Amino acid sequence: MRLAVRHVTHFEYDSVLDYSVQRLHLTPLSFASQKVVQWAITTPGIENALSYIDGFGNIVYLVTCGNIKGPVDVIAEGLVDCENAGGLVNGVVCAAPNSVFLRQTVATRPSLQIQDNVQSALSAFKGLEQLHALMAAIHAQVEFTIGATDASTTAAEAYLRGRGVCQDHTHIFLGVARALGIPSRYVTGYLVTGIGASSSASHAWAEAFVPDLGWVGFDAANGICPTDHYVRVAAGIDAAAVTPIRGSRRGGAHETMTVEVRVEIDQQ
Image 1 (cartoon, rainbow, N blue to C red):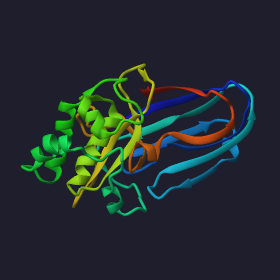
Image 2 (cartoon, rainbow, N blue to C red; image 1 turned 90 degrees about the vertical axis):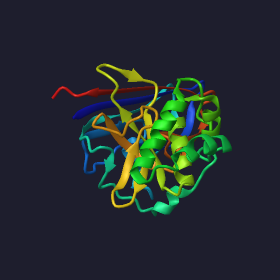
Image 3 (cartoon, rainbow, N blue to C red; image 1 turned 30 degrees about the horizontal axis):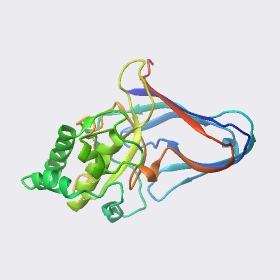
């Protein structure tokens, strides 16, 4: 399936932006079940940006610009061919050892409540079956509710509230999987939700390492493994590690940011 993606981040400032440096995790990779047909990022300074592959195998752009008057847009868009591989992620090269993805962070560390209610319930399952059971448990126990949490909410806090968004579902999954000794990573990307649909954010899900099988994706927010409706962009330890746009600036007082993401099935 060919998906068309357009991700627009719009920044407004009350004064001149003297200088800005931004790290962009906005470029998808090609691998066994995903082929990037075309992709481009448009923003001030992109023509001189430094690009590199980080330790997790992500394509990263480091963009600097200065003396900008008025708003700034960062636009990432393109076409990606996706296949349904049942969640299997083959062909992504990651220099970091799998053991790195056992490390808990403030965002992922499971609370005693999560351990009692979720982790203990998985003892009857093993391997891939255990991960599917984990995904189903989180999907059933944490309601998807936009606005119930924010970027700083931890897995423990979201689980206690019983509500959250895809970032929260993914952090809970990572925390439990790592506590069980299963390497798992946070993934950002896009999900097509319907013809002409748009949203205010990209999507997130988890990938876990299964011996003799490899890395497998699990979207606890939707209760399914990623299909050909998903575009994988970047992976890391947690959400903060692969924020689509992160940086610092001098000047540009009172920044406001709005995001619009549109993912559609391309009519070839």
